[in-house]
Length: 330
Image 1 (cartoon, rainbow, N blue to C red):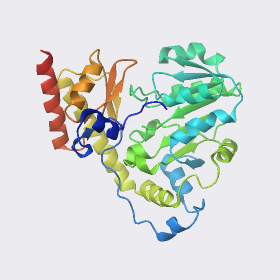
Image 2 (cartoon, rainbow, N blue to C red):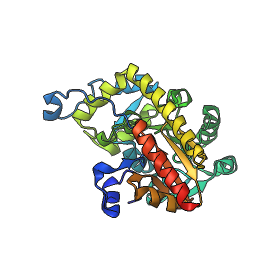
Image 3 (cartoon, rainbow, N blue to C red):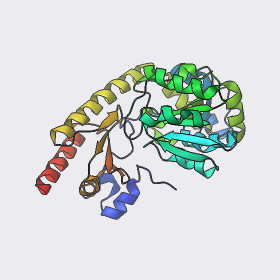
Image 4 (cartoon, rainbow, N blue to C red):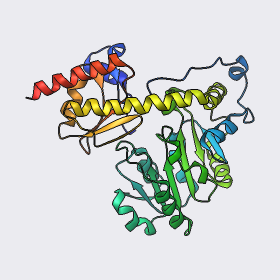
């Protein structure tokens, strides 16, 4: 199992701090969960059915013709390699590590490529995987560039897989409206923007034939009845969407300015996190953890991802810890 953010219980044991006393900024989730609707008893008592309106709500929300609900986009990441024969896969890196891992485990030759290298390698690839906006760097690629890559791949029967887990803040940059095209697959995460990662819900956007093949791999009843009720209610709440986007954007900008003011100018970020590259990443992570603030550490490129503080009190706690670290190293 690869390591991920959000392992709060493990940090509590390691640093001897009770879970309730932590400020967890490690997961890149919106810190304001949507309201959970009343769940009818029938959603718990009956097997889930696929004509309850969830798929249509998702199509409307994402602006896509076809969607397949899955138990979190991680499920789709692991199952997509089953739908092709062995070949060469490029993964735009650094990014969410599960993408390269899933293709390698399925026997594909995987090359992790940097953004300037994609055009050079693209014509030798069968699949290109891109996270947009990227996690953890926050890199945003334009729809025009991605569609050009898709066209080159599709000419040879290739795929462009775009993980848009952090796209909800900037829906105008999504490729969702183009996913009726053969060879273009978009993954969307529900939990991050809606702040409800625990429900394990995601969507795959693609042309109908590919979704049918993927549904056979997913199997029946992959998304529970209560999750379908909750997901539909959240996807239909357009007023809450606008409010969530506004406060995520404002809070992310405030976070970037806070870090910069204390000498830690981020190298990237998006509406749900900021990304800092520093040779002191390990030390800063440990210093903050001793003060009950959990960050996401990336050892391989000596960087840290900061999720969004939820309110003024959490910002104050972060600022005080940053000030203490600055004084400590002087």
